[in-house]
Amino acid sequence: MNPPQGGVQNGITVDTNDTILDIIKEDAAGYKANAPVQYTEAVAFYANTRSDDNHSDLIKAIVDAAPDEGIAKRATFKINCDANHNLAFQSDCQQLIRNMLRSKINIGDTRLAAIHGGCRLRVGPYRSAPDVTYNTAHAVAILIEEKCARRIGCCQFVSGSSPKNGGHRKVCLSSKRSGCR
Image (cartoon, rainbow, N blue to C red):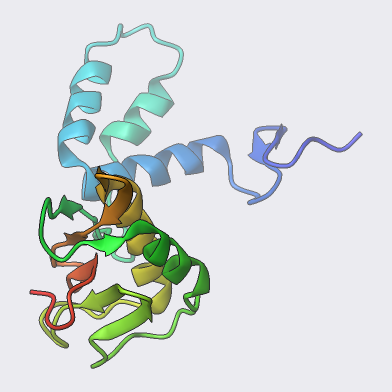
């Protein structure tokens, strides 16, 4: 009988051929690089275990986690909603998201990534921060549409953005015709 996908057989995960300990080390290194507060809390918690603990190898793996040079900081996407400016009909934004190309191609110096009706997906100035792909801009548009939808009278509107950071250019979903600063 084959183990289910993602299952473990003899201490090795079937899909990746990694040991459980390898996966714990990789996860710990990821937390150490990308969520240092949570990593420090976990280390403090596990440092208080008893000396006769049978899982000292697991505790050591977590405490000794060393981020790999290849583990880069992950881009984060904070979403800011604009209450009363540049409102676009939610239905236009939803259609824009459905129509948008889902490609890993970088947007480059294009500022208007996609448009449908009165809804525009715009990105910040080229070289203002690391470039984004159409796929990333599409995913951020989904986050903005979900978080920033609001009803005014009989209609649903959307207007919001994800500010630039060390990982990506600013991304805006609204009726704004120019800019995305």
